[in-house]
Amino acid sequence: MNRRHLLTLPLAGLAATPVSLPAEARPAPLPVVDTQVWLGQHPWRHLPELSFPEESGVTEAWAGSFESWLHRDLDEVNSRLAERCHRFPGPTRLRAFGAVDPTRSGWEETLRRCAKDHAMPGLRLLPGPHGYDLEHPALVECLAAAAEARLLVQLAIRLEDARTLAQVSWKEVSPAPLPALMRPGLRIQLLNALPTLADRLLLKRLVDAEIRFDHAMLEGIAGVAQFEEKLPGALLFGSYAPFFIAESAHLKLVESALPATTVIDLCWRRAEAWSSHLP
Image (cartoon, rainbow, N blue to C red; front, side, top):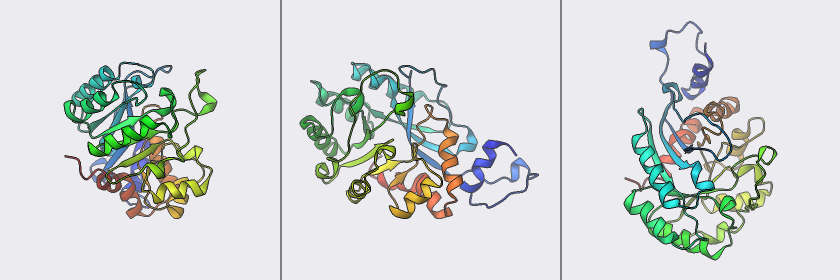
């Protein structure tokens, strides 16, 4: 039995499958909506091109651009991202999440282009690389504009483990101000945030504010199961591919031994419900 097939077994709701099971009799993988993938050239790593093997089950993925970390012309970055998503090969549907830096002049036009010109479903904001915290007045305006434009908002709280981070100085980002910034129509997902949230009361406040998370950097034995037990419903599937190998996100579900209904919810139902207003 190869490793990739092993990953599909729990996701298909099977406790065990004979090693000799022929390929045509194997269960189809569970549909997955991956809420965090990236395209383009990483600033200081040579990463493989993003791809989705058939057995991964990924039917839809929400993509940002590595180029948005350091490039200053975000309009060009977003245009390339939209084109890459449109031309992405294979059956997986890629949805582009554009970058906006609310601290720079002209961000309103960048947001408008994301929503109108490129018909993007959401934004992926990068407070660390772009040098602002979540109390910045411009961010409040940006979130209000995103809600008005019916754009989903993803906030990248962390982009790399500090132990492997290149020698660049990025601001530490605290999500503490976010509950007070929530408003009707505003939908926020925090990317790679869970390793930084040692404050359980803050985490509970964020969940109570209907802020969502991905599980790409969720660590610990049966970490997904523990999170689901304490704060059910707040996690969406997110792999951080290709920065992380996509299989790691599946393995987190496998080793947590989740009920089949929870796996289905985490893999696609929650993302589908959270983005239900999108065309």
